[in-house]
Every structure is written in C-alpha cells, then in structure tokens.
Image 1 (cartoon, one colour):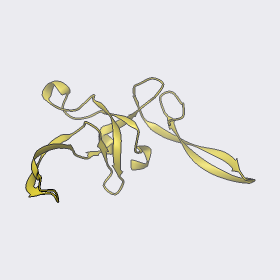
Image 2: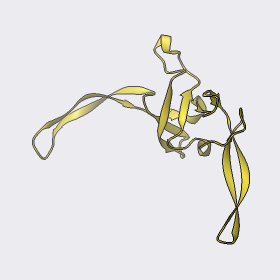
Image 3: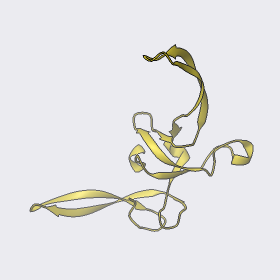
Length: 121
C-alpha cells in the first residue's frame, strides 16, 4: 500500500475530523517521508502534535528544549494522491511499460491516476 505513495507526492487527507471541528480532513500537503514497515507517511502541515522537549545545552551554551509542534505520521489509508490534471484526490493504479536502454528491454511499472488515466509524476 505504501508503494502507491512516494516522497514528494501531493496528498489530501480524506478521513478524520473536519477542519471546522479542529481536524485535518480536506487539507493538502507534500509527503516528507514514507514509513513502509508501518504503512505510514509524514505529511507537511498535517497531524501536528505538541512535543515536550527536555531542556539541554548545545556546544555553544545556548539553551534548547521547551514545547514544540511537529508533524506526526498518518496512516496511508487516510490520504489520497492528488491528480495533477484535475486537482482532486484519486486512487493510484499501475501500468507496465516496456523500456529499451542500451539494447536491453526492461518492464517498468508506471503509476497512473485512476480518475484521469494520466501518468503520475
């Protein structure tokens, strides 16, 4: 499931509480990191949580720590890739393509939008 969403994809949250109720449903963001072992993705500006960091000192003597807001991973089933043509969330399919390089042929899987049928970047 995580192979359908890659780092750098523009995704939209499709489940959860609405923005009117303080949730993230309907928000869009870029995928920063993919965790395939747990089927989760880290999306820019989505699922922000408060993290308490212990106070410490750096080499220069400046204080670090306090309360920070950081993004937490979200399950891949709760996001959908945005179709670059229609600008709406879409499901992702695959098409095999034969590519020839240096006299050798190779089958390559290409990600395709199920809504428009166009290739995804």
